[in-house]
Length: 293
Image (cartoon, rainbow, N blue to C red; front, side, top):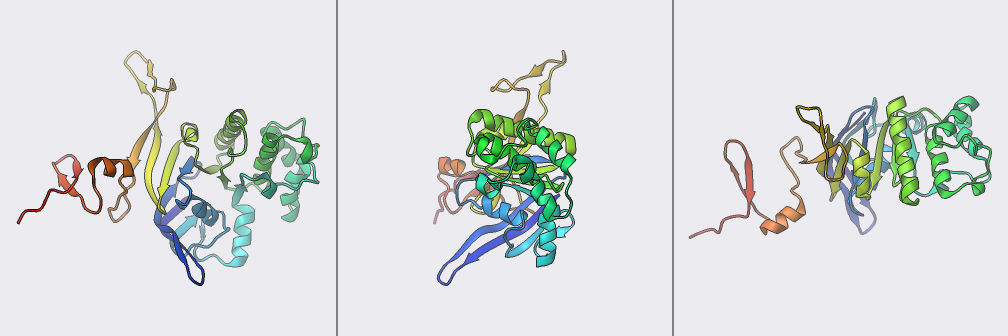
């Protein structure tokens, strides 16, 4: 569904140039539910804006389905944002029209695309647990209910991909769990690809794959694997008491570069150079030996 190769984004002003993405590589399968995590300034929001058609890449390649977002025209970009991608913001004000009911909010994107389908709009609100609240004005809904309306709106034009920018950042933990359960249900039942950008590491256990971004590059992946099952059919649980665990992988790009976690480098006192050995099975990275002579 998503393929990024050497993706670069540079922001320029008269006296400043900021490289937000420095050659990022990322692949997301169709129907996958995954999260992108990173500290502030890591490039994760820039990546989401590019995938959402809200910003243009500077170089490299980025494809979403059949669309080439590096070469897409302005006209095609309107079609892409209308039909391919749904967007959920952390700030409800960017999703919702306060003077309309929940149902009218969901119908609005349909009307703008001349595809009004009231039955489907009602179905979406039922999916997010608002069957009894669909005729309420927004000021009559809680913050969590408003965020669920926003999810329904993002699906109103039947997009192939859903992008969520910190979707649980402004709600309590109970509502956060509910929103993630809705995402999982939508992913499972209608097969939509879901990409969640967050700094909340607790979301990692609720998606299949987590990609960490650091300094504008993908650095680490955490992939959920099936639980271990012994000869008697018993599941060996993780330390959190759940039957699945995530394994951490360092990402290697197509020319062989990788990002070693900073904590490892600090522990080994590696700064600008490192020694590397291959023992036939493993690559061993260590602090450089002192030079003699």
